[in-house]
Image 1 (cartoon, one colour):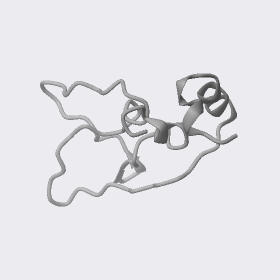
Image 2 (spheres, rainbow, N blue to C red):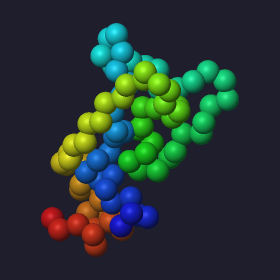
Image 3 (cartoon, rainbow, N blue to C red):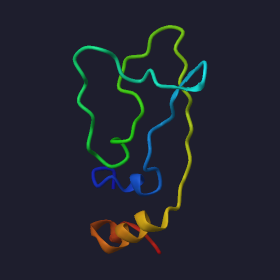
Image 4 (cartoon, one colour):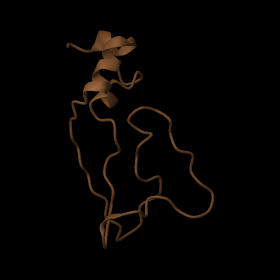
Length: 85
């Protein structure tokens, strides 16, 4: 189930975001060579790909989302065997 990214059906976004002066700080990516962004479900929407440094704050916002079109697509595909509608 982990290899098939089943968790992304219910947790399709990233972990959280940096906390800054305007609450949602956009400091998730550094200048210079870019770290390649994952295309895997549940990882492609992460809001940061940088190494944390002392003094940086990032939120942790776990949440289980029931988004109809994502669930319906999962039930029509190879993930259906892992889900109980």
